[in-house]
Length: 171
Image (cartoon, rainbow, N blue to C red; front, side, top):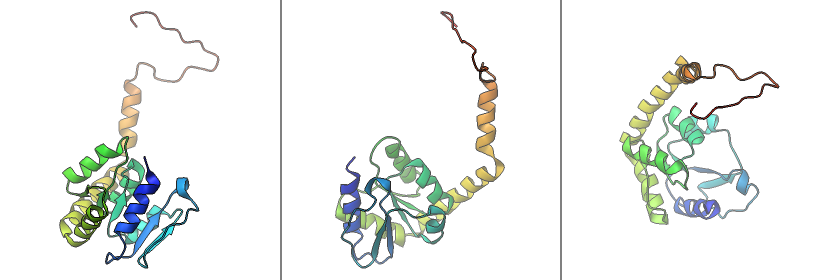
């Protein structure tokens, strides 16, 4: 995935951008040294719930968890996916006007961040999405959907301990 290379590229791209930049390196790169401009600070980790209260944009690999936390707070996204579900998530971000997916170059990342910060349409779209996410969470919609799926299952409850399960051809 070259996570470190992409992180270094993003740090370099954000050098001098008219914004304070907080970079969370994550556990895979905890303790590594990064050369940064005065407007960039790198930490191993930070609580998203606090950071997204103040964030104007989120440059992200587009993993589902961090993406949902940012969008729930109405923060637009600059998507730099590195594989798995991240590419599909980034496509959805662009499709819904929640942010941009730039080329993974210094100039591409920088232009995308500057545009997301400058154009209010991204912030508005992210704010609307955030309202939907928070409303769904408040209604317990996910819980209800999971319970409905579980009740529709042919196995209503897990087998008791020590029970042997067998299947027959065609079942």
